[in-house]
Amino acid sequence: MNFGIDVTGLCLDYGDTRALDDMTFSIAGGKIVGLLGRNGSGKTSLVSVLAAYRPETAGEVRVNGQRPFENAAVMSGVCLIREGGDVSDTSRVSTVLDFAARYRASWDWELANKLVDRFELPLRKRVRALSRGTKSALGVVLGMASRAPLTIFDEVHLGMDAPSRYAFYEELLADYLAHPRTFILSTHLIEEVSSLFEEVLIIDKGQVVLHEPTEDVRERGVAVTGPAAAVDTFTEGLTVLNRQQLGGSAQVTVFGELSDDRQRAAKTAGLELGPVPLQDLFVHLTKPRERT
Ligand SMILES: Nc1ncnc2c1ncn2[C@@H]1O[C@H](COP(=O)(O)OP(=O)(O)OP(=O)(O)O)[C@@H](O)[C@H]1O
Picture (tube, rainbow, N blue to C red):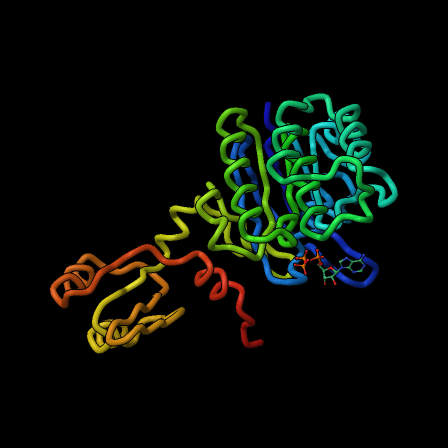
């Protein structure tokens, strides 16, 4: 079972601060979605509404067809893991897992135990004695083993070191393939995790900037690689997102599709064309605009 999401005209205010500003989007169930946005763009606010931690100020939010806030049927099927962990600092790791197992209808102990071993979680230790990375790993175990129809990781893996993060991505993909469900991952570490995303939702200043299949997003630009002088000549006048040079070779990322003629011209000039790194597009789409 997996939960889909329908959001229409969603607004969320904290007093005078409008954190979510007229958001509209739908996510079909059974996908891994990347939620990308700069600091303060509204990622945590959005997932808090989806997971019923907060009521919306205006608009409509439907998770599995129902309004989440104070709705037991939705809340029991949504698992939001935030970086802080939301678990009692004084409890032992084993107690936190036991509690989650009692609360989560679809909890899977086999998976939990496998991940406890993989992340070397100290079951007897109290949560407050865990390092930041180990606490994040505990969050990963709670989120994965819940097998919730909608599982949301809000920047949970940022505290983990690279081997642990890659272990997380591997376990997430394996378990998703075996037990498809809806995942939302909010992150700043775009490139290393982007291969997992089937869809990308980019938000900025509380608004949706882009919501597309990842493949389509990558086709919104082109990475041009080859001898530096030829690359620069070819990309002159185009919207350049990024330029890297190594010795005599350069790679320039440009925004916008290239016509067939331009693509042929690139090949004739000995240039290689490739997909655009998601990170470059993200930076471009969320960069501050001049006010008019
Ligand atoms: N409890 C709160 N009270 C008042 N304003 C808040 C509160 N929580 C968030 N905000 C404001 O709402 C906006 C969105 O914040 P939010 O935490 O949702 O962004 P974010 O994308 O998760 O940021 P980050 O990547 O830095 O975690 C920001 O302007 C923030 O200052």
